[in-house]
Amino acid sequence: MIERYTNPEMGNIWTLQHEFEVMLDVEIAACEAMAELGQIPMEAAKNIRAKAKFDLPRVKEIEKVTNHDIIAFLTNVAEYVGDDSKYIHKGLTSSDVKDTALGIMMKKSADLIIADIKKLREVLLRRADEHRHTPCIGRTHGIHAEPMTLGLKFALWYSELGRDLKRIENARENIAVGKLSGAVGTYSNIDPRIEELVCKKLGLTPVPLATQVVQRDRHAEYMTMLAITSSSLERFATEVRNWQRTDIREAEEYFSPGQKGSSAMPHKRNPITCERISGMARLVRGNALAALEDITLWHERDISHSSVERVILPDSTINVDYCLRKFTDIIDKLLVYPDAMMDNLNKTGGLIYSQRLMLAVVSKGVLREDAYKWVQRNAMKRWMAGEDFRTNIENDPDISKYLTKEEIDNCFDYKWFLRHIDMILSRFGI
Image (tube, rainbow, N blue to C red; front, side, top):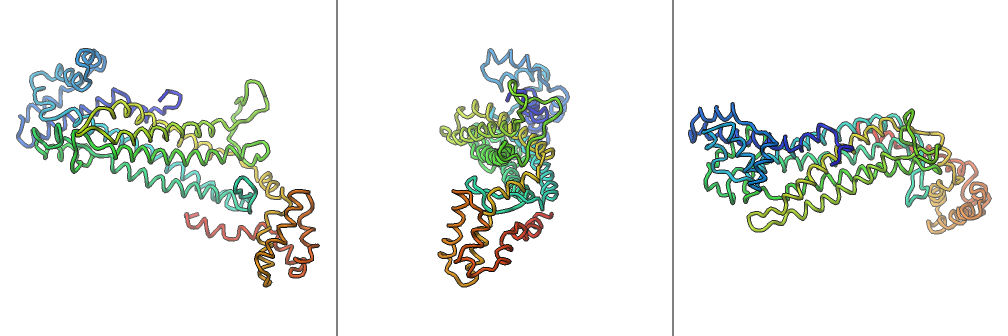
């Protein structure tokens, strides 16, 4: 991921320096486990712990000859350790170290994303409470439907992110695994107890069975859950983008002092960050597809997944981390315009109360089909010719036969539609 969208804490997880540091932790832990079981000298394990290190430029230099990054890394470590290096990587294959280290790195990335989601949910909960009774129009198909509140929208997002959180937490559990079982997963040259001891020390769960690699359905699950979370963010960001449209303008991204919206038009205030989130979600969804393709490997493994993961795992986790943080800031500082919301709610001259009118007529014993027809014909006069909907309803002989003026007036009250808001929000502890 380019530096522009990389938060250092997440970006550092995926640096080559950190990856080799984690792999060195795996190698050292394996040596210490072997020493604990009496399979190598304890003094050798202590010496390895004290001396084992690497120099990244030197690793790259060696790799030019070996054309194998793990061997280059081990060669460089051996240069620091000396004779006891003969015990390093004993009975292991490259993927034992690589995949176990990857489990640690993916776990760390998941921890950051989980923390990001929780922070965004906190902000959404606060703003849902703040705007629990701020009326706005609900839209279906982009068309005015019935009144609701802005707080209800924020609570809906809070709820969706709760499901995203559970999905990421479950995926974290499934990728926080390690394996040290050799070339085809049979422990042919390593004691299975080594795997147990190393994984316990590193905070991982040993996989019950592997080939040369940890199976990639785990990684695909994590990537797919990131894509779903990213798509949630895109959905929320698209709503903000629509709010900010000039012809709606019910809310908008915070516009900081000195900020510019257009190089050509000084009046512009654009939802640029939400648009960025929408765009970046496309990348994560595409990467999830690549992760699904990685599930299929030849026999006990091939290397076709490796080059893909070097790109999609860092890029996707950095991407989602960035977008979660950005959207948290957007919601925290979102500019809300309740007067504009009320103006828009009243924009159709009462058409949004059509269902309540219809049901009021039905409650008098009229067939629903007839009541629908009577209300709709008056609604279409407003819709197509701009006639006053309320006046026409009051003067309609079929409707006025069943409803008094007072009963009609009661139907044109937006508060009726909001009477259960507090009950709904109480489900989320608001």
